[in-house]
Length: 454
Image (tube, rainbow, N blue to C red):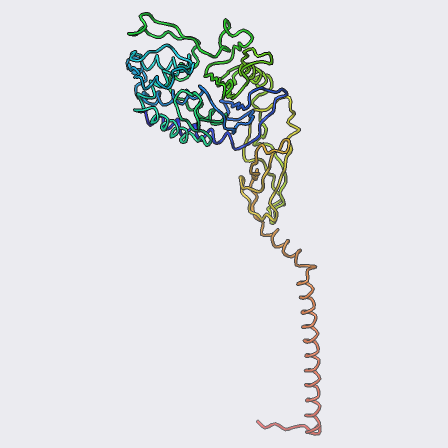
């Protein structure tokens, strides 16, 4: 089971890293009140919208998502054991919570509660005493558990996160970002029972030595409740965690699924009150508006087709033709705003020069970059659609054609003409010499006939 968990973690990190290759995101036509936001498409691994995503802010009770991760990892080899493992908290788990007014599930010092019930109290009621009881039991001390939280954050690739407690009350040096919180939550979603727990509207805790009867607790995310949510209710939202502090504003992590599309949304530091000083859940407003915008406007779209011919690349010495056609090395699809025509995407094509046959189908012969609004969507290789063999005849003809009319050609003509002239003069001179020698020999013998003896 541990090997499987490590495999899930490795795949998660790779997918999340890939989702950030392109920095391109969309901007809605409305404002949100949250200081930071991060909308992530779970199906494709794309960041669709972000606002101040890397700004360090106070996470409040969103901290408890990391606490839940460490608890679930403790039981990953036997998740059912959470229901039968009971622990109780000492005064060390409660001392720092007195007089803070923190959210709780009325768990008492020495009360025996199962890990399962503590997790539900942690995620639904946002119970701070449940967080400390779990932290103390797993880490051996509250500070050691905070160290475990930071170690896990580093493993998950969080670069702007630091935890000092398990519950999220305001302490110095306790912060995260919308992007880091998305990384943490996405990993948590891969763990068994996390989504079952964090998305339950209600849960019945067992009777204990301090509570004689079972008691029902409800999720603090009113967006999931028709009864309690009112105008905040949004039927497609599930879970995951709320968080509120004066220093943090209203924070929220949710998921939503509609028409086959799944999103994760993190927002931080929305106002707590309206202009009249009345409590208002602006974090719920922001999530509802962002999800409605996403579901109404975005769909998975083929931006680049791997079969589409894009350009002709000149090729020297080709058999039968002097070019090959190139196409993108693959198909590229992404979440796209269907109100933006694909024709508005700009193509920048660069092809190689001085290509010489042979060329094989699939050879890289250039690149194509797709841009929108001055930002790069993707850059891909351009590859040959077909092979082109080398022609010896074409090579010889090309060499001959390139030779004729060149400086070397004219130099050769000059040298040839000079050689011919020298050769002709030499022949003439030799003939004159031989002729003169023959005449001189004739005068020496006076023209007499010479008798030869046998």
